[in-house]
Length: 66
Image 1 (cartoon, rainbow, N blue to C red):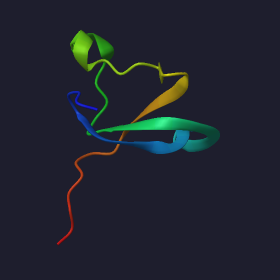
Image 2 (image 1 turned 90 degrees about the vertical axis):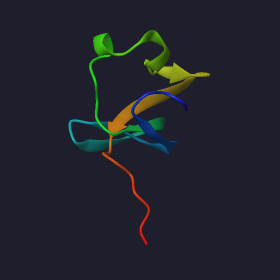
Image 3 (image 1 turned 180 degrees about the vertical axis):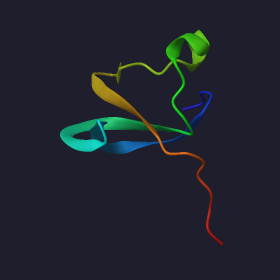
Image 4 (image 1 turned 120 degrees about the vertical axis):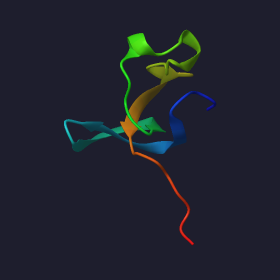
């Protein structure tokens, strides 16, 4: 997913208020969450893709271990 701030994508569980729910979603991992009004239209992440719910989760920078 070539969008600003996105560092990974996977299948996982929705996070709400710091707790994991039972909802299986497409997880879009970002370095930090940014208010929608600060993003370009091309960088907005939809609430669902092909009928699959999407959850944006802030994970910070991802680095490979040596």
